[in-house]
Length: 398
Ligand SMILES: [Zn+2]
Image (cartoon, rainbow, N blue to C red; front, top):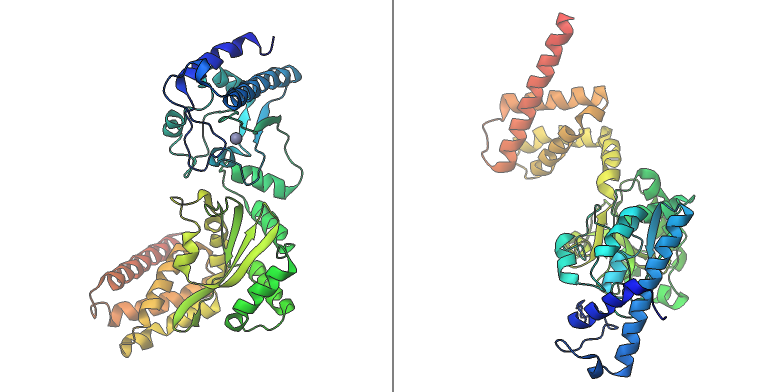
C-alpha cells in the first residue's frame, strides 16, 4: 500500500477541490479546472499530487512518532530559497503544541483551503498574530515544509528568532542578541561594499571602507537606535532595519543613518542616510510580512536616558522662545510632552528644574496662544503642577 488508509479520503477530497491555495508567488502550485476526473490529469500533475499526499502522510506519521516519544512542541521548518512560497515563508519557525496540532490536523482541510484559513487567522499572511491555531504542512502542492520536534535553544539569538517567528515580543536580551549578530555581518561581497561606499561616501562624509563600516558599527552601538524586523516583500528575506535617532539635513532634507541587514543571508545589505517616511515603508504590514518593531520596548530605556541635563537645558530655552515668538518653541513643547511620559524615571533635580520652567510658563504665557500642541502642552504642565502640589500636601500630612 502506498499511503496509510486515512490518507486516501484526502486524496479524493483534494481532487474535488482542485488546488485551492492561490498566490501569484506560489510558483509551484498547480491549477486545474473545476472538478476534473482523474483521467484529465497530466502525469506531472498526478505526480505532484502524489508528492503532496505523501508529504501529508509523512506529517501524520511524524506526529504519531513524536507523540510516542513524548515530544511536547513541534516547529515548522520551511526550506528557504527563491521558490519558497509566501505561505511557507510565513509559517516557517512557527511552534505548535503537539497534541492540539495533531487534533487539528485531523480536521485540517486536505492541502490548503487558504481562504478559510486566512480568515480564521486575521489575514495572517501579512499581519500575523501570536495566537494562531495550529496548522501543519504541507501547505500546498509540492510543499517542502516539514515539522521537527522543538527544543528550547540555548543560544539567545536562536531564541530571539523563535520568538520573532511566533510574533511574541522580544525581551532586551533577545534584541541585544540580534544586534550582536548584525555586528558581525559584512556586505555579501567586496564588490557590493565598494559600490555602496561609492554611492554614499559623500553623504556620510567617509572615504574608506573601514570608515564606512565603522559608521555602521557606531549606529548599532547607539543605545537610542530604532529597529524593526520584517520579511521583505521585495526578496522575501528576513531583514533587520536599524536607524539612528539623529537627524542630519542633506540638501534641505532630514535624514537618519539607516542600515538594512539580511538575517537569512547573514549580511549587511546597505547603509546610508534616509528619510524616516521611507524607512517606515519597510515596516508597513500591508506590504511586508511579519512586521515587528523592536524599539517600542527598547526605546523606553533609551528615552529615559535621553531625559538628561541636555534635554532639560533645551527645555529651559522655551521661555526665551515664547518671549521672542520663536517657532522653535514647538520642539520644546514636544520635548516637554515626552518628559511627561517618562516622568517617574527623571532624576529629582531635573524634575525640579522642569517644574520651575512649567510654573513660569503658566504664570506668563498660558493664554498667549491657542492651537492644539500649545493647548495640550499647557494642559499637561498644569496637570503636573496639581499632581506635585497634591504630593507636597501628602508629605506635609505625614
Ligand atoms: Zn511550501
